Image (cartoon, rainbow, N blue to C red; front, side, top):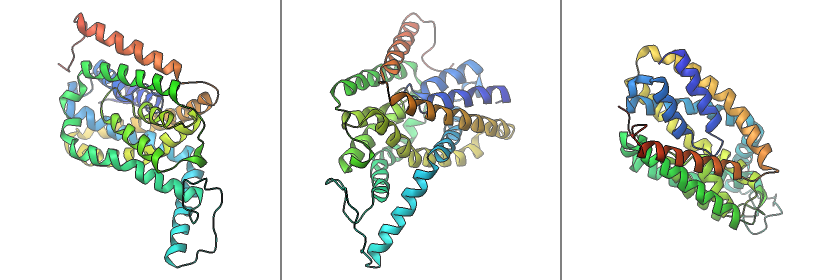
Length: 297
């Protein structure tokens, strides 16, 4: 992988990781178009996962104050319980969290709970997820369309009322199981989790914010595990370009987060749904007429 290929992949990753249009689908096309690693599926998968660490850095920077508040409150509230210093009772629970937990500490538990499904499924089906079959364009196009339709249904049936203060275990589980779809190329992690949030009755902005916070454990685990594998399977000369790709993804990813949250405050996900359906249909037509190969040559 050279620097030009790396920067292209970084831009694509940063643009599509948080926008609900499937980063994997776009990275598969970008990797084919640029000819990264001659189409080696294992090396391409490892590269994609490591570049995700750049978008993870974007989440840490954008939500730095939230992450600090959640972490400090989580430690403080649980330490108070362990030391039997429960003098402070938090109000405004609305029946969704224990009164001895602050909203920020409760968010910590929701992130932990919502991360369990994808952690379990990701470990059990790791070999399949990283294999050649997951890069099949038939599968990717079907997932693009399927999740796009589910997102459209979620937009129609969701009541868009819940804010971050109203989230409970049920919300975490719904969004967490929806995030499992992200293991399938073409689904989109942000698309799946935002869809789950809308089905659970969250506002669009809340669904996006919780989606980004929930991405931290999943992307961290995936990126660090693949980073270890990358040291073994990627050529030595690829690591500096890989670093450039990761930095590029971080910068572009930060801008993407800012854009999506601002956009969803006033707009629906309709434009992304239409894009997914058009792209999925275009890939199916191209495959049907033999314009593109379903798998890497």
